[in-house]
Amino acid sequence: MDDIRSSPDRELVDAVLANRPGAFERLVREHQGLCWHIIQRMVRNPEDARELCQDTFLRVHQCLHQYRGESALKSWIGRVAYTIALRHLQHKRIALVEPSDDSDDYALVENIGDGFDLEAACADEETARHLHAAIEQLPPLQRTLLTLYYLEEATIPEIARMTGLANGTIKSHLFRSRLRLRGALETRTGVAA
Amino acid sequence: MIQHIDDHIPPFDDAAQEREWLAQENAMRRERLQLDSTGDDARSRRYRLLARTLREPLPDALPADFARQLAARVAAGPAGRSVESLLTLALAIALAVAAGAVVAIYGGTWLPSFAALLPAPHAPATHWLLALGGCLGVSWLLGLWQRQIGERPN
Image (cartoon, rainbow over all chains, first blue to last red; front, side):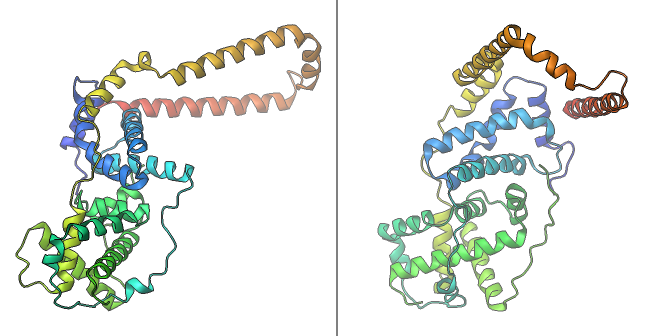
């Protein structure tokens, strides 16, 4: 668990609050990757994402005294980044999740697939591009959850702390988006579902 | 901001979906540990390819000196205010001056009408309003004091 009073997180926060030289820069450096992953996946526009990352850390600096150490600093900063990106999407009237018909995706459940040589397909740059395009086409929330889960290696409870979503909801989003991406891959490789 | 969230992850109601979920999880774990994929079935290999793609770093990262620049901006404090905030401040001052000038010029005709609307100094309503104001003030001061306690490093 991450509920530790004398953790490195607590020490770093105390150093920033005490205005120790280099402390805030260290905090930013340690968490800028997470912040970028959340915001860039949510808003997709690099210019906006850079600005929102800046806003996130300014807000973190402003509100750091509210950090009580009850969750990891990573989750706390992730929550700030997620909230800021969410507000940006709401302001731009961009839907976080799209209502979609999942029946096609669910057709793949328990379909083991045939012995198609996927390794050969992977070597095909075209397939990789196709998969990246399919990821980009996912709704902002699903893209972000996948990135947190795979790239940041965050657990579902950690993602729940960042997004405020229930564990079951996150699990369901991850499940459906992976199924959908698998479907996109099978379409590309020409394998019938 | 901090939430207490249960760490339990509920299983799917549908057994087939739960099995598919476990296949997804297993493929992700195997890819993360870079285990040999020779014995994997086609479904697992697809999920592993997906995992590999999702673990690739995102393009267009933040600039290399992002942390340093931001720390310098924060350290500059109020002196590093943006042009927008300075313009907002100038506008607020101009509005305050204009309001003061309007009151000074035309206030003589309005103020008696407003004064007539106010309750008499010894009326019971005035005492209640003062009591309410006092309560709000004490509550605000307590909040401020609690925040200052919270700001102190452990």
